[in-house]
Image (cartoon, rainbow, N blue to C red; front, top):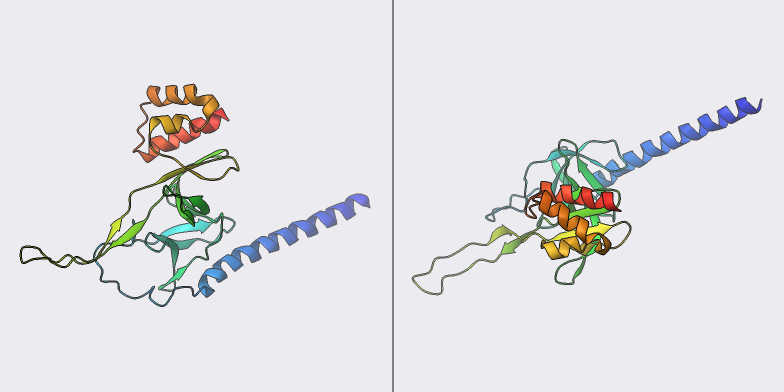
Length: 228
């Protein structure tokens, strides 16, 4: 009798958890569909030169915690994650620690709180370069608007306003610590884990790690994670 009662309770709990997961996933999609923040010009044609995006294509992705596949792209100018729903552009509601994983590549974006190189505290999407249990390496993907330039003399030419890519900034996070800036210099990188400087320096040298290559930074992140 006790075994039957235990099994009945277990099945009830399992069904409840499954139903809750379905509701949460559906709420995620509904939140996007109903989110009207800054929608006024999302579907308007922008004639400004350049692009707000590193990749203008909508790509299949999942929001962590949901099995729903959505089509997303990162607006690097507004720092919004845009979604194509019924030929309309919507925006994923921004919430801290939201993870968006592309399904056809290892690329992921996480909405986090961080302090940039200028000491300004921000919240926004960072691209994950190396995603491990104890070590994460991020980079920014941002675009800014270069203002138009009017000719100062008859020898100058008019330059229209244009979107341009900002300089990449890199960050790292150890465990549950806060996200810190990561200058791409050997001294800064080996000191990520001060007690493991020699091991990290040797790994960089032996594997000819290039700090300008995302694949190498991912490899380095995995190695540092193995040391912790």
